[in-house]
Image (tube, rainbow, N blue to C red; front, side, top):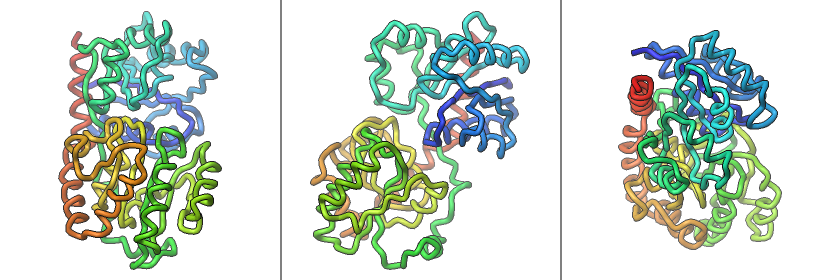
Amino acid sequence: MKFRVLHLNTERGWRGGERQTLWLARELERRGHVNGIAARPGAPLAEAARREGLPVLPLNPFFEFDPFAVRRLRWEFARAGTQLLHAHTGHAVGLGALASRRAAVKFIATRRVDFPLKNSPWTRWKYRRLDALAAISSKVRDVLLTGGVPGEKINLIPSGVDPARYPSAADRVRLRSDRGFGPADLLIVHAGALVSHKDQATLIRAFAALLAQRPGACLLLLGDGPLRGPLGALARNLRVAASVSFLGHRTDVLEYTALADLFVFSSAEEGLGTALLDAFVLGVPTAATAAGGIPDLYGGPGAPELSPARDPKRLAENMERVLGDPAEARRRVERGRETARKFSVTAMADAYEQLYERVVGR
């Protein structure tokens, strides 16, 4: 069965959810389904979709229940013969719930964050409108159940990665040279928005403790956000600012990940952590916190790659286990590559095809 799907994602920036939206639509298109992406004009997702040859519906809602955006979506349903509206963010669920009401389309969504659902009539109404809901990790599924979403509506569908589109780990020396680093430089990389739930403050504190044993190490933080100033002040207060680089929003995040000696994820809350999957594919050892859905990537919260959230001392110890033991680093690389094969775009698209079939069949 072939489907006509409109993917709804009106985020202004480019983060993991937008990349997953694009990769899913692209893979479904390759399989013969008709896909469009409703996105803000000029936003990174809209531009990336156009480069991939995917149809884009410009949609610029002023708020979650913008009546003009609702009307435009309904017009698109009629014009394109849309069968499925797939919302990829929480705000998109509200917009989609209104647009799909009394329309001949099925309505599904993907929940990518492990934040609790708001306890409000509006939130309850818009999630009741869904025909099905995908959770990207077991933690996200648990949050949805706690929030009152019926279990029969929830489907566990992890995010996926596409190894064919990654730089080669063999390019590590060149990637370092192009960015001013030498082969012997000790580089620790983190990628993520500078926001509270990513908790880079714990990472900077852990790095400060690590420098006592690894005085030549450098911490590279890729991403931007409202905590850029406070995190810079923390690095200065801990007297590690000279060894911490804030690189801002980058289009070459994968290249920076590939050149790392260690990739670290310090989140206090996290839907799944696809940046860790990037490191797995690239053959880079990882250290992470056992927060949110991250343990799903490691087989459970007790994995040696994981340390407790908001615990700089334990995170520093976790990092040193990798840097001080080449055998442990190799073990983490091998396990990561094995895991990445299970979290592929192909597997993700298979699961969504099956979900679409069940929903349209009903």
